[in-house]
Length: 310
Length: 305
Image (cartoon, rainbow over all chains, first blue to last red; front, side, top):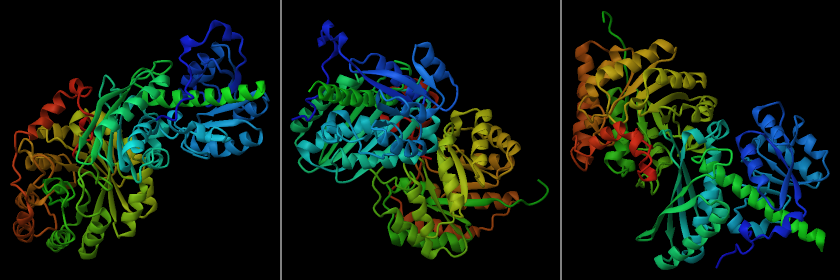
């Protein structure tokens, strides 16, 4: 029932002999929190390796990358463009910047993984639609709330038909950076659209709540779906299946409240605990989007590597 | 207080009061209440889903009538006063704000949790661009100390807010808690300061007075005290209290009494009293840090403003 058969094998199944396998070189633009977390995740990857971290000025993030032995540059996108070996580029800057970067990267034949709300290319949720969009030159990672809730809506829609999907994402205040704060409408609007375009709901609505409680809360997502066929058994099986798919790349993702049916309304609550790579564990909202981005890049890298071999 | 001071009364029967009627206001009811308040001389009349524009949802309760229809209905009858809407960033968006402006809304209150003022910058900016009066509205003010409230209201002022509000959304503050916060903000900011009370401790009127004495010049209330939880300050009574105290409001005490009794009261589903559940908010406030991690998502922080 899943479209996620591609999902990477858990690492323990990869034999020692694979270490000599060639990896695809990737770059990161934007050495902030997201960029740094991506860096740590890429370091674990079997399919991609970080060739360069770029920004527009010296910063903690740049230093961190250098200390780990990575090449850095303050020439931003231009430094990446000058590196022919870099095939995939994570853009962790801002929407306005990505709008400028996107055409340059495309022209240079580099695949862009866009972690900004620019949405130049199609939305991607690894466990839902990666096979449909894997040939695109630019992929957008939606929002953290989108990565956490679209799969649930998708899972419910495929067995019960989603007339309306509404999600409420609660994040700890500490994990919502200035970019999210200055443009919170992009979260609500982009997430709502993704519930429709990727999740399959006829109509989507998204609400975001920043919770300042200390110690910080884990990201919690409430998903309400008005369904056409209120078959709770099919819905539960489908949701359980997709949760397993998400857990492959976000181990801290869990179902806090399994599907509850009330008339034609299904309610599901999920929680996301981050992996604690660079960002603290309560930043599950950031972890899920960086994990999704790296998983997407790995999938594309596998395609590229397969293409080279063929 | 030697000289009579003008206090701007903001009626939110059609917004915070909407909670008390489960967001079931009809076009006819809105027209009757809004025109009654307008004739009584209320300058600011707030109207929206209780959780602001776009609040109609599974999570916050469905409105019987869309925001747009209700706003148009309010706009069509308000002649002297100004129609106000509430927007909570994270729920409503700039698109809702534009819709409201198109419907003739002149004032918007942008509400955030008391520590999260920086999510309101884009909305305040857009309100100013649309030629609206922008009021920055900090909810759950009891959860922050006066210094923090000052810091956050300063942000609102820096974004262009024409007025900042301190909202005791859980009705938890005692008059001294109100005074501390309001006077600190009045001292630190140039723009006028407002106060929005809840009646969980039956101190809504007393707290409103404390706010005024501390320098607030915008005060909220609702007819019959209609509002989330224990309700708000009862505006018709507050009008009388302020008159007795020597403040001017421009509101006709007898006319607003009639609006409350003849128009609002017949609509009410239940008397607006302080029930035990209203104290959940108070306990909730005190134990917030402990409980927050364990409560269901939708109740964690989104306050009823």
